[in-house]
Each structure stands twice: as structure tokens, then as C-alpha cells.
Length: 85
Image 1 (cartoon, helix red, strand yellow):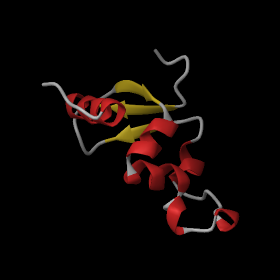
Image 2 (cartoon, helix red, strand yellow):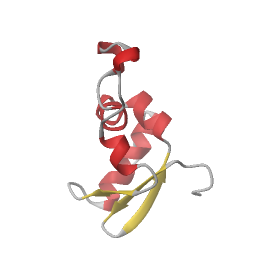
Image 3 (cartoon, rainbow, N blue to C red):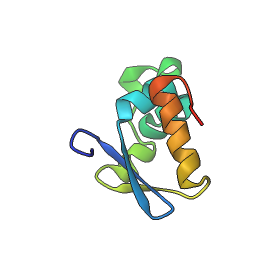
């Protein structure tokens, strides 16, 4: 499951593996989180990537604002565009 993932979240003590490219492509929040700013609003030559990406590369990102099941539903929506409950 985690073989090809490049980001790991810790949600309620459980590790959730995902892919930065998918999260950033589908969510402005994650794009800003990983890149430091909205790439469409800045000059790529001036972008330093000093956002949260620099602090979490190779690490686990703690998620404290939502529960495990809700986070999985969020990822399901970002990956597929739909949610089944």
C-alpha cells in the first residue's frame, strides 16, 4: 500500500499513505501546503518551496483537526471525485 506513496499522515494514531501529486492537483489547500504558495499566482523562478513541504519531507504529517474516518472520506473524494458512505 505504501510502496509508491510519497506522503504519510498520522490520523488518530494510524498511518495513512497518499501521493503529493494527486493531493496537490485536486486541492488548493494541499498545493499550498506542499509548495508553499499557489503556483499559479507566483513566478516559478522565485518560488523557494519554503512551505510546509520543507518541514515534512521524509516525515509523517500529524492530522489533529479531523478523525480517521473523515480523513479517509476526504482522500476518497480527492482521488475519485466522489464519496460513498
